[in-house]
Length: 135
Image (cartoon, rainbow, N blue to C red; front, side, top):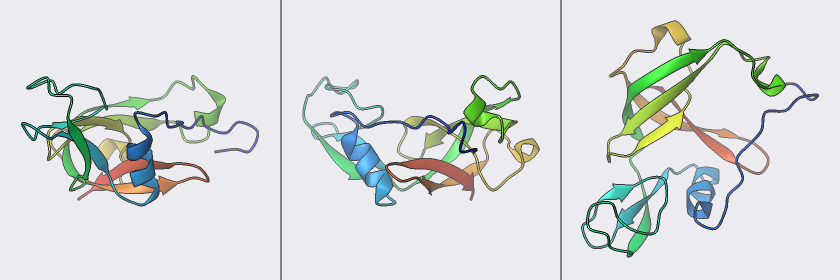
């Protein structure tokens, strides 16, 4: 990342604040239906399974598997120029939800579908990004 062109970072809104607060504390947080106990991500008002509007935010285990990935070579934004090529990965968490993220701690050529991964957090001043490394 260069000072001239920093990468854009997410900003929490009211519905995602518990997720981002958890990330800053080093904990992956997910919504969980209070009635049927299904996990969900991203945050939404009603459970997809039972339509309940009752939920809690709970810590996830932080483990999952690579569901799919791609390697980005094109520099669509100058903030990513210094790190290209980089991977964009969908991790299926042990709890079930799928999270778009990046794999760190491995070469892009070493990433495989089904690879077990574990969360770690890339700390920035105002936000921590959940990334995954090989387990």
